[in-house]
Structures are given as C-alpha cells and as structure tokens.
Amino acid sequence: MNRFDYIRPATVAEAVTAASVPGSAFLAAGTNLLDLMKGGVVRPERLVDVSRLPGLDAVEALPDGAFRIGARVRNAELAHDRDFARRFPAVAEALLSGASAQLRNAATAGGNLLQRTRCAYFYDPASACNKREPGAGCDALGGENRLHAVLGWSESCIATHPSDFCVPLAALGAVVEIEGPGGRREVPLEEFHLLPGSTPERESVLSPGELVVALRLPAGADAFAAHSRYVKLRERTSYAFAVVSAAAMLRMEGGTIAEARLALGGVALKPWRAREAEAVLAGARPDAATFRRAAEAALEGAHPSGENGFKIELARRIAARALALAAAGTPERIPALPASPLAPVTGVALHG
Image 1 (cartoon, rainbow, N blue to C red):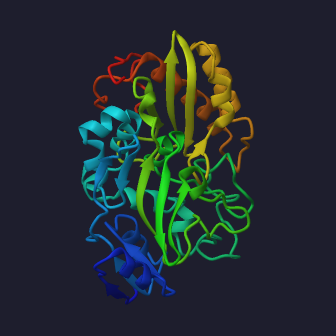
Image 2: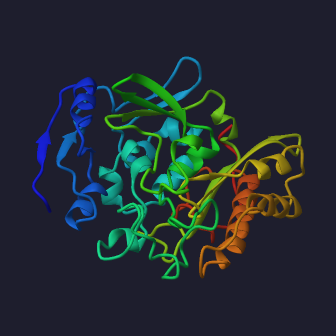
C-alpha cells in the first residue's frame, strides 16, 4: 500500500474542500476501498475520513411522506429498522442478502452506492483494464466472462455493478443527495451510475470533491409494501455477489396490477430499471403468462458480452420468479435465507 495523507474533517463543507484536491478519496467504512488499496488497484494520495461527520447517520420519515437515509447509516442498521423494513421490505431483503453479517455491520449506505465492480480483471493490476487504466484495453473481453454484463456494455468494458441495495432503490425511484464545491444537488439513482461507453473509468455522475450525503425514497414509494420482493441467484447462498437479481414491486387493485416496478441486478454496470416490463404489467392480471411477457420485455435489448448468453434467459426467469413472489404477497417476516429463489411462492400481505 502506498503512503497517503489522512484527513479527518469536522463538517461536510470541510470534507468537500479537502476532497477537491486531486488524488483524494473519501473513506467511510472502507470495506471496499481498503481492499483496493492493499491490492494496488487504486492509489489515492489522501484519504478524507467522513465516518464521523455529523448529520449523516439518520433514518427518518419526512413530513411529505418521503423517507431519507443518511449516507453513514450502516447496512445492518437500516435492514433491521422496523419502520423502514415494514415500508420497504424488498430493500431490507436486498440488504440482508449481501455480504456477511460482519460487513453489513460496517458498510454504509453511501459506500454501497459507490462500491466498485468485482470484475477479476479490474482487481488484477497485471491485467488490462480500461476502468483502472484508460486506454489499456479490456482483458475480460475474450477472457473469463461468464458473469459479466448482458445489458449496456461496450467494447471498452463489460463489467457489472455488484450492489444488491441499489436494485430495489432504482425500482422505487430513489434520489441521491449530493454535496459538492458548487453546493447541494439531487440526482435520481437511475441516472447516478454511468454505463461504460468509451469512458468506463467514470462510474458515476460525481465530480471531484462531491460527497453523497443521503438517499431519499419519494413519497408514495411505500405503496408497494404489500407486494414487494427481492430475488438473488448466486453461486453459493451466502457471501456471494449476484449472478442475476431482480427487485419486483406491485400495487394491486381488485386482483389487477395497477402499477409495477421492476429492476435487475448483475446484468449491467448499473442497477437496470426495466420500464418496458413495467408498462407490460400495468393493468394486467398477475399470472405466469403476464410475468413471462414482462421478463421478455425487460431483457429485450440484452446480448452476450462473451460466454454468458445463459444469463439472458436466467435473468428472464429470475425476473418472472420475483414477480410471482411479489404477487403472492410480502411475507410477514423476511425469509431465513433472504432473497433466495428457492423460497416458496407464498406470502402474507400484512404490509399495506
């Protein structure tokens, strides 16, 4: 690990000023950043510690019906917040399906958004990676790529975004609150992460010195609480990132889907909101044929980036499974194995 300066600012304004210096990086829990530094993948010249900044650790319902999550809120704290889990059960289920209990106790909401891809070539400084070194090439193309992107990828990068948390947030229309040298601004989560294009080194809309201070779920997002699920297929049931995942939310009226939300994980370099699928679901009956049509619409533009064509059909099936589970009703309790696709299609709609 290279030598670096360490700064612990007392306020958000001081943190923004300190991180505006080239070569700086924010440090919260460090569950991803420190691993990257130890492996020589990233080499910041200064770390700006935001883990003790005041005002960023609250979980609060706002007067207008929105729900705000401070960037310093721990994953476990949020998942086990009773009011939050009741209103947004798919988000809580996604959080509890990620990493280990120890990591969930440390990792933060803001850090979860900004975690880097787990592409093995990105993590290996001896491999060519445009994300790590622009213009170097992409060894994942033609390499071991069965778990890489099938949507939104480019010849410059075929990596995927690893977050579970972000998938239901994208489906619910979450907003990211950002503080920077130019003041405060807000960006929809759906637009926060960038697809690789020809500049895969730029992963989000953040500019130098900008700090994520909170996430906000809009008023009305809890209208899906009674029919809301997250499903994650992984190579082992625990401590693994998604091969494919899906967050499905339905608002039912008289046995018909009045409104639907669907987002996919593990398929692109950002959580992928499937608006075409949502349009198919709106006004339809909640049955297997409808869910299959919606899943087909969600993956309409997908194509393999290597030896991963199987992920397209897999994503269709996981999307349909998530929709079936959501239609059955949100369980009264989160399953013992959160987000498992092997869970029975049963539910108790007690979250309305």
